[in-house]
Image (tube, rainbow, N blue to C red; front, side, top):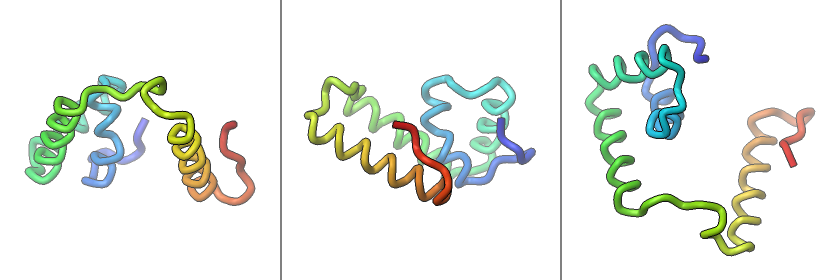
Length: 92
């Protein structure tokens, strides 16, 4: 669950995938939609994401070449290490 009462644009961008996948809690979904109601920029961003998904479809792990999957895994691990700090290890 998110900590702030109202969402800011950066949080909306971070949550857009969860929103599109219907993975937000009812409370966070309401907060997300309240932000969209007052923010034309995030509304446009959400529409762009909808259109991107419509045009590209869904990507599943089996669609990736093994070297691409390895590269994505390495990118995620670096990102996770940066986000969690030097003492935390990313998941295998």
